[in-house]
Image 1 (cartoon, one colour):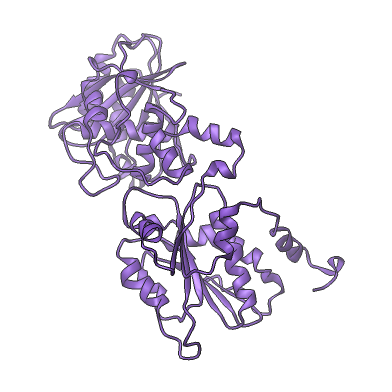
Image 2 (cartoon, rainbow, N blue to C red):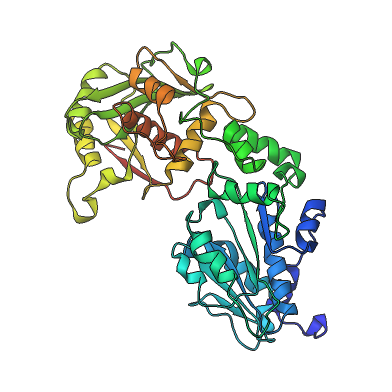
Length: 441
C-alpha cells in the first residue's frame, strides 16, 4: 500500500474505520472457532454486528473469487445496517471496480464479492454458490426462510471445491420463543459439531451509565430481551407489569393542559384524556361512544370540559385518521378540530406521518408502566378511566404472536394510549414526528 502521505482522503477514512475493538473472550471465540453455523443472540449495541462486518471483509480479502453475503429481514434493513460500513471496511476506494449501488455488491480486486441480501423475499439468497455469510436480526426473518431457502443455498454442492462447506452467522436480539430460539436451542443442546451458540450481555461491553440509562427507559422484559439477549416468554398479557403501583385516585385540575389520545374505530369510538405531572403520565378520563364518529367524540369533549380553564388540547392518535387531507378532503382530525375551533379551544396536533411498529409502541408503554430500574411513570384512575384500566390490565396477545393484540371492546382505547406514549416516550429513536398548530395559535 502507498505511504500514508500518498493516500487519498477517502482511503484514510476507510483505514480509520478499522478502529480497535474491546477484547471479549466470547467474541474472540466466535471469530476463531471452526464451525459452520454460529448462533449469536447477544445484547444490543454489544459488537456482534461489528464483529461480523470485519470478519466477512477479512474473509473476502483472504479468499480470491469467494462469494459472501450479509443479510437482514428486508432490503432496506440490510442496506441501512451494512452498506456504508462494508464499503469503508473493504477499502473500496482502492478497488479497480466500484461497489454496485443498484445491486448492493462490493467487488474486490481478487475477484471476491460481498452481496447484500434482503430476506423479505428469501429466494434472493438462492442462485449463488456461497462461501459464507451472516444474517442480522435473525429473529425477524420469516420463520420458514431458514429451512426452505437459506440452508439449501448454503448446502449447494460446488464441484470445484467438493470438500468445502459454506458457513453462516445467525445473529441478533431474541424476540420471544420463536424460530430463532429453536435454532439457538439446537446449537446449545444438540451436540452437532456444525453448530455452536455464542452469548454475551450488553453490560459486558457498554459503559455502566449507558446500561443504567437503558434500564430507566425500558421495561424489565424488554431490557432482558434486548440488553441481556434473553429469550423472554410471552405471558399472554400485553402489559404484564401493569398493577396496583400504576393505580391512582387523581383527577384533572382546571389549569392542566389536556392530552387527548385517539383511536378511530366506529364502535366503540375510543379516546383517553390525560395530563402530565412531575411524577409522570396520568390517564384520568376517557370518552367511549358506541356507533359514533370523530365529530361526535369532539362534541362530547367540548361539552364535558366546557368549564375547564386551560382551553388548549394536545391531540394524539392514529396516522390513518389524516386520510384524505392530501387531497383537500376532511379527515377525522379536521372534524375534531372544527368542533374545537367552534368552541374557542386551541390545539396542537401531534401525529406521526406514518404508522410505527406495534411492537415498539407496546415496549414504550411497558417502559412507562415500569422500567427495568423498577421506576413507575404511568398512572391510571381505574374509577374514571375504566376502559383504559381494563385495556392495560387485561389486554391479550393473539395466540402464537409476540405483538398482535386480541380484538375486544377495550383494545381501541389501549391503542390510543399506545399512540401517545410512542410519540412522546419512544424506546427506539424518536423517528419522524409531525406537529401541526391550529385553532388560533
